[in-house]
Image (cartoon, rainbow, N blue to C red; front, side, top):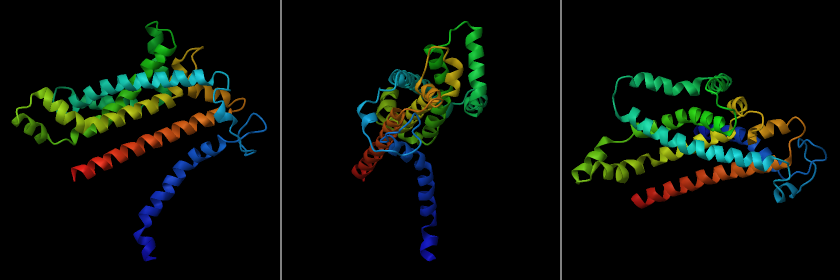
Amino acid sequence: MNWLRKNLVVIIGLLVMAYILIPNLVVVVFSFNKPTGHFNYEWNQFSLDAWLDPCAAPGMCDSLGLSLWIGVVAAAVATVMGTMAAFALGRYRFPGRSSTNLLVFMPMATPEVVMGASLLTLFVSVGLESGTTTILIAHILFTVSFVITTVKARVASLDPALEQAAADLYATPAQAFWKVTFPLVAPGIAAGALLAFALSFDDYIVTNFNAGASTVTFPMFVWGASQRGIPVQIYVIGTVMFVGAVAIVGIAQAIGSRKRKVDA
């Protein structure tokens, strides 16, 4: 009983992690399945066919490429805009700052159905045809709030004395920013960029409202395929994305641990 009390938090944490990761592990396992019919819901036979030909499903790789392109561009633009806004909100006092902070949280609190419909109304009212451009604008609009929140938390934790020390050592404001401030904020910026990309790549509801009739992103392709049977190749893409995300986090942790050891 004493051992259980001492390790209860660890045990609960591991159980929660297992619960979260079970769907991902199912995706990994069934990416090696060879189903007998259209639906990949029951294990039948081990096969590498889907891995050897991931673009066998018609239109899947085109939708995947579109989602990756939109995700990268939306994340890049949202990261630049969100970082600048985070510095303004986190370091300066100006009229309307409290109202701006409230407005930043509104896209995160607004249901996606409402946001998608309102953005569609906006695009129609200005005469902008639905397609890749409207999807990109919509993704930037709802991901920039997440970037601002992430980076602002990092900016708020900075010690102002560090920049003051740089100024005492005759560093210009630009040198102090790029040599001191930016490296300290960089992990928050990277986290915001990755979050923005993940949200953009994964979004279906807002995208479906603003995609038009001919534009199909990867989540839209998956939803459409689910009506007639999900190809095994979709599980392959899911496995690659999952392993890639885990690898990025692992590399970041390893680099951070190495830097801490060097500093120590």
